[in-house]
Image (tube, rainbow, N blue to C red; front, side, top):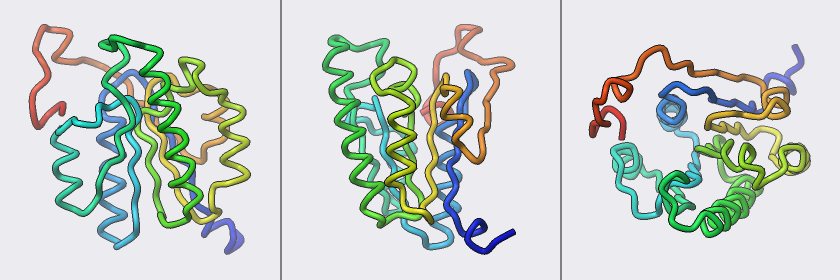
Length: 178
């Protein structure tokens, strides 16, 4: 294998209907921080004031998540505003990616923008091919990753729900789910 191919940044996708897509991405962030590599996290749809456990922990580790939403789409009071905030998040993500300051950029819940048709997957992939720094790793999370994104990625992990406490009426718990 050529040295250039070994040093090329990877594109990873965590998708599926199971839990753990973002949590797995946070594990990769921890690995990178353990190697003293610079990391950026852009969280789409998450409310800018959210103080989930992972946000608190990442701040302690020196990572300030960039949250670009107004909450989950299913609770949105104005879906047009939610879409505009998410699209603004893509503008922010593009600036983060092209800054070439980070060895890992995580686009958390980014697949929703593609799945909802707010962004065209082929245009996003073309932009990434033209602008992502060659050595930068990119990790994208979210349900319903489009086939074109799966084809573009180097590594794709699908989380499959086998069983979930929520289905039995058990509410999400701090420290476990958020």
